[in-house]
Amino acid sequence: MKRLISLLALAALTMAATAQIKNFETTSIYKTATRTYLAQDTALATADGHDAIYSVIAVGLQWPVKFGDNDVTALQDTLLMRAFGVKDMSVDEAINEYLSQPAGREEYTLNLVADIDMERCGQRLMKRVDVSTVGFCERYIVYECSYFEYTGGDHPNYFSHYINYDVERNKMLMFNDIFAAGTEDRLEEVVLQALLDKFYATSLEDLYNKTEIHEDFHISRDIYLTGNEIVFRYNPYEIAPWAYGAIDVPVPVFLLTDFLTPEAAALFF
Image 1 (cartoon, rainbow, N blue to C red):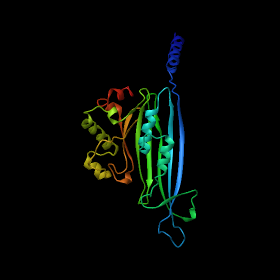
Image 2 (cartoon, rainbow, N blue to C red; image 1 turned 90 degrees about the vertical axis):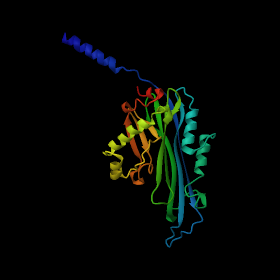
Image 3 (cartoon, rainbow, N blue to C red; image 1 turned 90 degrees about the horizontal axis):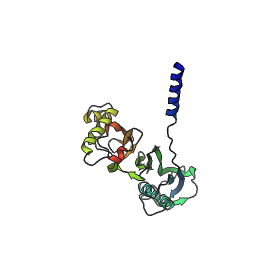
Image 4 (spheres, rainbow, N blue to C red; image 1 turned 30 degrees about the horizontal axis):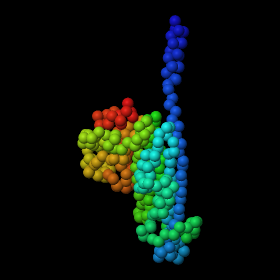
């Protein structure tokens, strides 16, 4: 009898282990490009000859070509708009347009150069954009568009935007596609509490005293999905001094069920 029970238990485990595996074929092209410019009109000559300002601009792009049987044109158009602020261009045209606008072009006359003479390099400006997937499951894929720029100040600036792509519906989910209209006041309370919990604070005043996070809190529209959370991204300077960097506030989905649209809820439940 015990042997029969053991065999039945083994059969049950075997059946449980043969869950359906979904195969979803995707294809991406990884595009990279870099250009270097030299500032020619600067009065920065020094005794040791380090008088050059170079401006380097770069792109790293994970470009979607295939997502199952989906027509990815809308996704491609959204990536071009979010990454480069352009439309009605091919991806290569958009990259070349971006590379023609290096950091420092407003302050200096910049000429394209083939090689950097490091012995002359007094300062290097930098500007780049990177686009890649940062999360996925069988129902959605998340893209991050991250930006970095150094124009010669005390520190560089950087920030990120996110695109949540509903694979089954072949649709980009923006903030208003994920959260139902009329729920923002209650949603803000939940996100604020998650922020307070993150820094072990009891109120906005307490939070400011501990972190210098601004008291004029708001809900970020830059959000991305994970397996069981929705993360609200606050970029540098958005609610806190630059030194705090980007602040991610993850909120468990079970706390957000009353605020989700039906299509957003279907991604989790």
